[in-house]
Amino acid sequence: MKFPLKPLYAASFLAFGGIATPVLSNELDVEITETGGDGQIATCASSRVGGLNPNGDGFLAIRSGPGTQYRKIGELHNGEVVYVYEQRGQWAGVVYRTDRVGCGATQTRTVTHPSRGWVHTNWLRDLAG
Image (cartoon, rainbow, N blue to C red; front, side):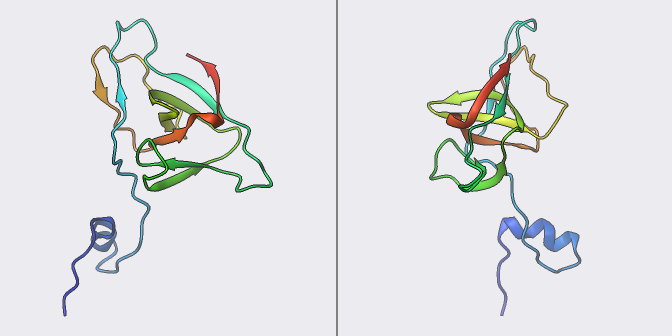
């Protein structure tokens, strides 16, 4: 009997010689867009995660789209820095856990950084940008 591989497992199946291992996919359901500027004004802003209750769940969910109906693809914690490229209502499209961020695109483009996703803005504190 053959079982089709789900896309999430396909890459790990090939990489580990046929043993399917679960991996957390960072494929987004809603892409993040960086709006092009004049090359002199930043096209993203830095923020720090803050206000999470350490006695609660203690993390900010990173989602594959701007809403709780989208898959959780990761977590952020108090003090972590993110770079906000797009905002849709109370949700921000961010890049996280990197120090190599470009915030000066002159043309509108899709953000393709591997550490990207959507977070609720209630837990973001502006730093600069």
